Image (cartoon, rainbow, N blue to C red):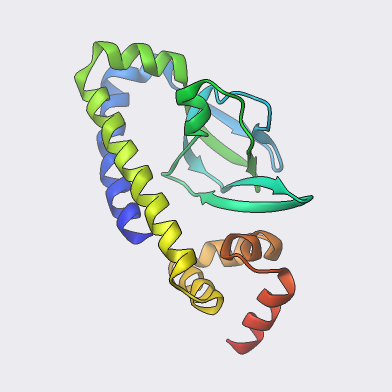
Amino acid sequence: MMLYKNFATSVLKDLKAAIDDQMADFVELVEFPKNSLLLSPGQRNLYYYVVESGILVNYYIRDGEEVVTSFTFPGDIVADFRTAVFKVASTDYIKALGPVKVYRISVSDFDKLKKENNLLLELERQLIIAYALLLDERLRFIQHTTALERYQFLMDHYPQLIATVSTRYIASYIGVKVETLSRIRSKI
């Protein structure tokens, strides 16, 4: 997940420059209190968000349990890209784990702007590559490491996640039950 982080950071720097020059009139800073839902199942994703502060969690419900697919930190982009691109209803939640501030631009405004600006088209292409890289790294993370290794990785690279996010979200993210995470923590 570090390849994605490095690539995404580079892309976001270019996006910030584009926002400053081309999109400032279309971007707004919005604050959400803890537990706010930026997206719920049945809704269409209407915005692309860049997190200024706070942490968001993406999850879906399976058999009555929340299954965490990702966390979003300051500097990251979050959206349900499938719903934004294909204009279908979401099956996922995007939830604020605490108070968050995000910059947002509507999907429709961004679509209009990128028709007028090749830089935005290139940035979108790079964001798609970054997202594909994230998904590839997430798949490898789950398939090629043990639960202990996954938890250790989070401790080493995302200590703020371990310190601030509930154990049930962390357990779900690394693909184990809360009880298993408890046993893992006792070994460390």
